[in-house]
Structure formats: structure tokens, C-alpha cells
Image 1 (cartoon, rainbow, N blue to C red):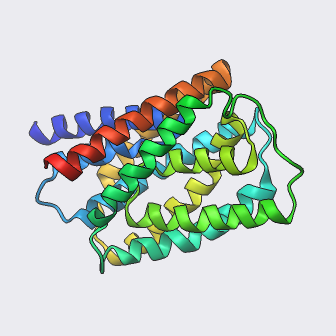
Image 2: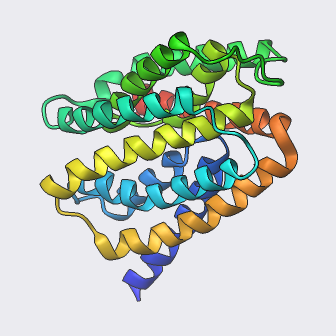
Length: 256
């Protein structure tokens, strides 16, 4: 009975994680802490890998949902995803050599800057001002994908939010275009991390399957809501998720 209740709670957490992640990223804020709370004595790498298995289904679904209504800027998304594959695999590998907690103060500071900048720039991401994507866009896609891919494999919180912000700030995308691009890159980071974890870590396959189904359900609901309500809604969700990320990282950094 205890195991059944535990699985139920984790399934609900995965549902909400999929909902949030499909809109602006940040689903790991819900899903990963739930796994750590449920299995406090389990190896962190096992929980990270199980989380990735559950998340990739919802992330892929969100990418498909968005692609039906929003044109994907492949000149940016494709090189970004390719670079993210490599970066995320090495990021996951680096977990064995470095403590991800060393990044917390830096990531906290970056998230505060992102939140303040987005809040003050009311027009940021409201409309698309993208140039015609050429060599510069490809280079930006490769750079963003590689750096954020490594970060996602190594640490992870806020990956989707960082991707969305950088695509808006550096390439002039609106929130919907940035979100679908972020989903494409995020699928790649998850694939790379999973490929590492599957070969090197014992994973909780049954639990991952249950959470994947729940994550998928939340993802479908969230992506449909984002498409229905548009960039204004996504911007508000973005600020809300970044604010929660800041609070969570501040707690982990200074109060834990």
C-alpha cells in the first residue's frame, strides 16, 4: 500500500511537471525533488536518470504539439540540438568528477538577472523580430545548445528557461517560437543524458514508465494551453517559473 501511494504521489508530481515544462521549462523543479523526497537513500545518479526517462516523453510531445501550430526555426534548432547532444553527454559524465552544487550561486545570480531583465523589458518576446537566419544564427544555436546542453546534463534546473531567454534575447524570437526551439534542444539534452545513464547507472524503469505517462498527460494539456493563450500567457508563466527557481536555489544555497 505504501509503495502504491508513493507511486501515486510521484505520478501527480510528474503530471504537474509535464504541464509546467511544456510551457516554459522548469518541470524538474517539481519532479526531481519529489523523487529525492521519495527515495532519500537512493543514489542521486539513479534518480537523475529516472527523471530524464520520465521527462523526455513529455518534452517530445510538447515539441510535436508546438510544431503543428508554430513554425520551427530549424536553422537554429537543429545545430542547437546537435551541440546539446554532445554537451549534455559530457555534462552527465562530469557529475562523476565534480559536485553540481558548486554551480548554485552562479546559477542563482544568472536567474535573478534573467528575471529582472524580462520584467523590466515588457516587450521582450512579445513579438518576433527575428532576422533571416544565416551563419550567425547557426553559430548562436551551436553555442547555446552546447553550453546549456552541458549544464542540463551536469546540473539541470532552469534549462528550458535559459534556452527560451537566450533565443529571445540573442535571436529576437517571441516566446512561442523560443519555446518550441527550446523543446527541440531539450529533447536532445535528455537523449544524451539518458544514453549515458542507461549504460552506467541502475535506473527505476517501472517508476519511470508510470511517471512518463503522467508527464505526457501534463505536457499535452500545458502545450495546448500555451498555444491557445499565446505569448502573453507564456511570458507570465516564464516569470513565475524563474521566480520559483530563484527561491528554490536560494534555499538550497543559503538555508540548507
